[in-house]
Length: 265
Image (cartoon, rainbow, N blue to C red):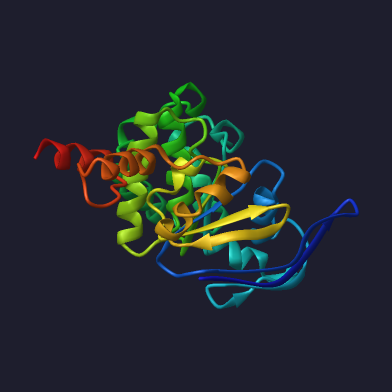
């Protein structure tokens, strides 16, 4: 879905990326994690055409160039850390409609698309509410609806789960897994390794370089490397390791519900 080759980028004469190469596979959930200042958010801004760069980037087969940024943005939905910074209208309905209006959708199609996405996300009943008056989970779902309403090929989450409590985060992670099962490519940018549990592949970025990559099983085995980068293993992985040590389970379990059901048996 996204191919990054020989990416070079400087910000105010500070080198951020030097010969960075990445491949984000189609219809997969990919996590890009790293400490603050590692270059994660800068990469997002490059992918949506906010920064000029040297190298080669293609998104869904289309090269990312200065003169086709609008076309590229139609392929991408993006959700940021703080949804309040994304809201542009006084109602949820108008806020979600803003994305489609910018893409010249017809009025009747806008209403239909908004109804579809908000019913799916469970926020159809708050369309007339002011988005700033919602709770944190509702705000993030509204931002997610705005990112999904135009049927993008890829969804980028830029620290989008950071402000959620564990219960709300779990609900949104399940929604993301469902969307991925329907064919949506998801790129999760985060500094929290707990957010990587649903990933098909994980990249670990540090100082603008990929220092670790692989499936979650492969990356979680590199506990020492992760620790040196400031990461502990996700809670479910640590719990699984302890239970396997005592022969209470025979494999790593990433889902709490599956863990409870396994132990209950």
